[in-house]
Amino acid sequence: MYDPLTRMFRALGNHRRRLCLELIYEAAREKGGRGERPFATVTEISRRLKIAQPAVSQYLDKLVAVKLIEMKRVGAAHLCIPVEESAARLRDWFADLLKS
Image (cartoon, rainbow, N blue to C red):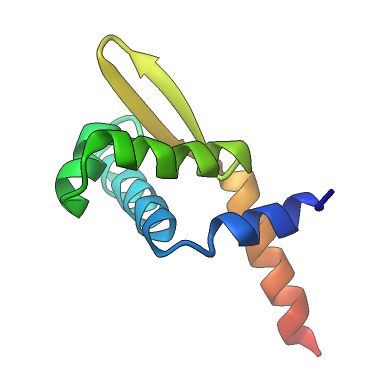
């Protein structure tokens, strides 16, 4: 149907999904810089965006489907972990585009 890059761009076409992804990367930078595990929880994202958790989960499901994030369950918490390789693929695509 679509190549993986196109699927990523389609997923990022939604403003709230982009916000979720930004918060996940922001949390990863902050926590990683303090030596903690780099992730955000669905609860944290829901609280920051002032959106119900089920709605946030739907946005995150799309990001998982295109491999921009991974989800892991630890106890009652659902951890959202950025997939650096996918972000690098997007970055490289833009870098190639800007070379011309």
